[in-house]
Image (cartoon, rainbow, N blue to C red; front, side, top):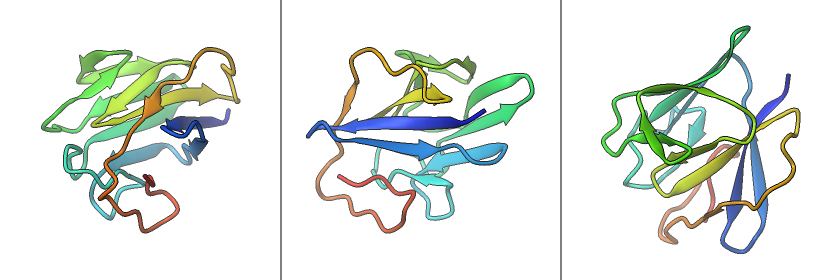
Length: 123
């Protein structure tokens, strides 16, 4: 099973971030697996876990919350097509490249943020 998080930038370009391994920590800190260098994102914001039981999203005590399909969650099951909102960033969950239909949600990241690695978001 291949899982990725798709982000669509304001210019319409798409970027996919593969979920590799059993756990992906998303946050602002340099040691996170997926880094979102924006002040409204906590240092360690949320965790995505992959297991035989499926895909789970867990908030890690973030200040501004983690949202699944517009609802703030502490922990939730994820399905293909779900939207995850972390600060100003919205990802769409893709499982084996699906779903490939529907209208994307555009993410606008403040221009003063600078990314430094392959798993950093870029404005």
